[in-house]
Image (tube, rainbow, N blue to C red; front, side, top):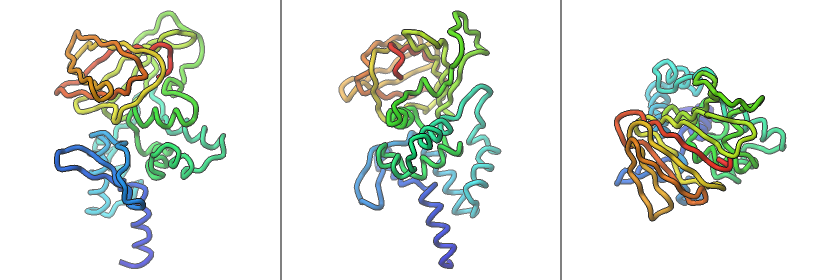
Amino acid sequence: MTGSASCASAKWRAAWAFPLRLCARGKRSDWCPRSGRKAATLYNESDVRLLRRAIFLRRARGLNPPAIAHVLKRQGVVSPPAEGTLAPGQRFRRLRAKRGLSLAQVAKATGVSVGFLSALERGQMRSSVATLRRIARFYGTNILSLFEAAGDNPRLVRPRERRILETTPDVRMELLAWGNTAMEPHLFRVKPGGGSGESYTHEGEEFLHVLRGEFEIWLDKSEHYQLKRGDSLYFESSTPHRWKNPGRKEAWVLWINTPPTF
């Protein structure tokens, strides 16, 4: 391999081949090649599958990042946003530019790699709910702001009028009401294996009710609940929580936060 080819390959790996490692027990851990230290987990199972496929296309077929994105979309591995969905990365890019910050500065403050942030801002990568929360908190905002639910405060919201945000191909959030409200109601639609990624926290309290499928949630390190259709759960949002769909069918969860701080 020539020097220029080696340099190009190194740049690609820095942006796309994120430093992931699978532990023997199937748990994920991240490792920073620069520091040689273990870092916090930032990627969920769907992220890992996507990265493995991207790395295969790069190594086996020699495709560059734009070509990889095209192939993944054509194969349905990366789905284009549904009508009415938004790209959080674009909002983050505007916030970063407004503050005059570099990707490296944001990466250092949030613990998210430069390559991942860059791909997210360009719309070439999606992010878990926990990672979105981490980035949004750094910018002094929240996930609710990513819905861009501007305008009047409607009493009635038809299904086709819902504001939609897809964090990953496995997690779809539909905002059910917005405006000057004391509550933040969502319909979470989580595909099998989809989840929040790492734990996250925010202010307030929250209530969830499983409408369809199965849902699993962890509160801090001491509480673990396996919910089925008809089950409900109430907890303080300041408790670190993470969740996933352990079932074989899509889970539908009515999720309400108060006040709107999610």
